[in-house]
Every structure is written in structure tokens, then in C-alpha cells.
Amino acid sequence: MFKRRSFSLVGMGLILISTLLSVFIPYIVKNLIDNTELHFFGFNNYLLLAVAYLGQVIFSSLGYFMFAKITMTNVYDLRQKIMHNLLVGRYSFFDHNKIEQVPSHLTTNIKTYEHYVQVIPQFISGLFLIVISIIFLFSLDWKLSAVMFISLPLLGIIVTPLSAFSGKLSNYLQKSSALYTEKIINCLQNILYIKTLNAESQIEENIDQENKELKNIAIKSGGVDAIANPLVFLLFLIIVSLIFVYGGKRVQSGEITIGVLISFLLYLLQLINPIANTSNFFMAKSKWKTNKAELEKYLTLESETTNEGKEELTEIKNLSFCNLSFAYEHTAVLNNLSCEIPIGSKIAIVGPSGSGKSTLYKLLLRLYEPDSGKILLNAQELNSFSKKSIRRHIALVPQENSIIGSSLSDFLNLGQEHKISDAQLIDTLNTVGLAAELNLNTENIAGYDFGLAAKNLSVGQKQRLMIAKALLKEASIYLLDESTASVDSELETLIFETLLKFKPDKTIISIAHRLSTVKYADTIIFLEEGKISGIGTHSELYAQHEHYRHFIDLQLIKTE
Image (cartoon, rainbow, N blue to C red; front, top):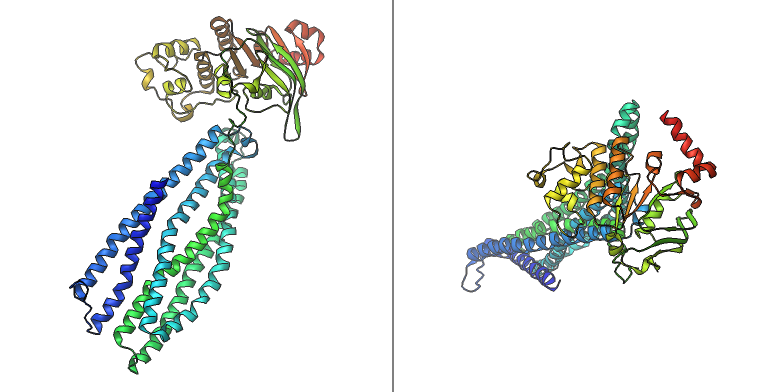
């Protein structure tokens, strides 16, 4: 950090030296016009002018390059910090922030930050140029200088309200852009269903409304930017015109030389960019101030290791839920739930949607913390163990096909403590029937690329790939969240028989809706409204539990 700050100071110093050299240029031109020789280390006016121009270009280029390097490094660190926070932050963050909006928010906010940082050296060098130029201008002719600086406050009167209004529009534009992007993503993710509904025109109309809103805000924002800079430039031209008229009369009267007037006008021309950059700086600052709060949300995202347990879980001997309660915001999901899961058992958790089935495994993985009650592992509270060690002993096959990256080998090795041999990968893929389908062997698996997010695989193949990954993990508990929902009955049978064969001593907890999944369970837990309303074998619950029987009968009717 100290090295980076020093680098910035050196860069700023070079820019200021360049600015100082630019201030001497009009003064040297004045001496050339008035035939006044300026001696400096033996150089005449022409050599001094050449050195000033060359030095200005060299110092300016080096200074702005150093600043650009620092800016890009800071932007890199910002992206890295935010990505780190999103990965290690609390899972509950995504309960309040739509995943589809996150990329848009980050892109917009980081771009705003980047632009703001880039105009800072321009603003500082501009102020420096203005101050030094004022000194030179007053030394040349205080009356002309007074005419100019009496007019300058007009710029502040115009720029200040425009900057504030531009900041508000920037905030509206960001929110509208994020919503538009979200709708586009949602549309494309469901394009098949949209086509089957013949709903293309309705969806297009809906998105077009958002597009129009985005266009209107962008036009207003662009209008403010379009008005601000030309207006500043116009005011500056008025000032220049006044100087020409008033200065010309003073030349005619012999009060000043033509060289003084020309150099005076060169100073004014040099001030065009600094004054324009001043307005740009305050606009960029206003936009950054508006967007900073949004970015701060990602930078201050609390890590899920805040309440990290200190003990390392080495094995799971027993698991139980004791008076467990949990609510999302104010919606209760689990209500005083208690049960014991024998290690090595095969458990099916069934029940209507919203009964808390998936929440149960999220609490077990410590993605959330219970509101009350506790989960016990080896007779110790779950939160006494580190999250990483807990997750090391639990393999999850989620309902969604959460395939990351495009390389098959890299995905199967993702999260593994040791690299898995190609032979073992092929054996596992054979187990789920994928090796033959994809023509995989030990010679070609390392280079097999299935496309980003496995776009080249079918839904069933993706689900089997997720199961293969779980099989490769040496876990104590296997959590299956409707993991066979996208495969046929024959393959489902193969998958469960494989799990039972290769993981006979492991605990398998399956969140299920299908009868074909339930039949492999030793014990079935029926959840209703966050409570266990029934527990037992399939035959016991079918005979004694009305809702479970209804649940099974509905499926039997569907299969007839």
C-alpha cells in the first residue's frame, strides 16, 4: 500500500511539473513577440520554448501513465475484494439481493469509481494550473485579469446544480439498467417456455416498457452532460471575447504590448480544459457519491466465518436436531423440530412444498444459523465446528444443475483436497452411465470440454454429473435434494443402487417427492408446516398417516 501511494505521489509530481512547464510557454511566447530575450542557463527563447514543450509532453505522459496503472490496479483490487466477499460472505445476502442484478450493479458502480479516480489528477493539475496562471496573468496586467475573474463565479452557479441533478439521474439510470438486465436474463432463461406459450409479443412488450424507461432516463442524463460542458465552454468564450475587446483597446492605447495580449489569451486557452475538468470532476464525484453506497454493500459484506467454530470435525458419529426453529425474515419455516438421524441410515424427507425440507439441509451445512434450538454432531453443537470441516464431511447434490466452468476434469476435481486420477474419474462416470454416452476414456477426459455451465449436455446428463461429483467425495453424509428428478426410473434405480453399493456405511438423506425415491429409505420423515408429523417406514406411514397416504396415492394415480 505504501509503495502504491508513493507511486501515486510521484505520478502526481510529474503531472504538476508538466503543468508548471505549460505555464511558462505563453510567457516565453510573449518575449518572442516583444523581442525581449529571456536568458535561462544560457538558452535563448527558442530553445526554452522547445524544452518547455518537450518536457511538458514527457512529464505529462509519464505521470498519467503511472496514475492509469495505479487506477487499474485499484480497480482490480476492488473487483477481487468484492468477488472474495461474495464467495465467503453470508449466504443470506442473496435472500435480499437478486443474483441477476449483481453483475450489472458491479459493472456500473466500478465503472463510476474508475472514471472518478481518473479525473482526480486532471482536477488537481487543473487547479494548480489555474492558481499559477492567475499569478502570471495578474503580473502581466491586473485590469485584464480582473475582468476575467469577475466573470468566473458564473461557472460555479451553473455547474453546482447540474452536478447534483446528474448524480440523481445516475442513480435512477443504474437501477433501471439493473432491472432491464434482470428481465432480459429471466426471459432468455425461459425462452423455450415462452415460445410454447406463443407469448413472444407479450414478453417483448413488457421488456420494451422497461427499455423505454431506461431510454428516457438515459436521455435525461445525457442531456445534462450535453448541456453542462458546452455551457461552460460558452461562458469561457464570452470571457475570451471580453478580453479580446478590452485588451485590444489597451494595446491601441499603448498600455500593454501585443505580446502581453497574445500570451494572456494563450493562458486563457490553457484554462479551458482545467475549467471543463472541474465541472467533470464534480459531476463524476456526484455520481460516485450516489453509487458508492451500493458498492459499499458488497465491500462490507459480512463473512460467514464471523461466527466460525474453532473445532475441526474429523468424523460424524451421530446427528440430531433438537427443538429447531427457523424463519426467513418473518416467515416461519421450521417450528420446534426434533429428530435423530442414525449414522449409516437411509433417510427420506418428504412433505408438501414450503414445509422446510431444503431449509433443513441448509442449516446442517451452516448456510444459515437456527433462530432457536440446535443441531448436534457427535453430541456437540454444530456451531462449535468450523464450517469448512462440516462441509468436508457432507456431499450435496442440489436440485439445480450447479455445474461450474467448462472442463469436465476441472469440475469433478473442484473442491477436492487431492487431485483425482483420470482412471477413478472414468470409473465414477461409468457408474452413472456417462462415460459411454460421452465417449470418455482415460486418454481424452483431461481435455474434454462440455461448454460453459455444461451447455452441451442434456438436463439428465447434468444431473448425473452432479451425482458423480458427490460420489467422488469421501463424505459421511450424502444430501440429495430431488437429485434424481431429471432422470428416468431405470437410471434412478441405478443411481440409488450404486449409492447403496459403494456407500453402504454412509448416511444418505434424500429430500424427495417421488415414490421411487422413497422406497430406498429405511426411515421416512414427513414434514408439514415446519414440523414432523410422521416418522417411520413406508408401510407404517402409509397405514397410519393420512397425509402421507394421500401423498403416495396421488403418485400412484399419476403412474397408472
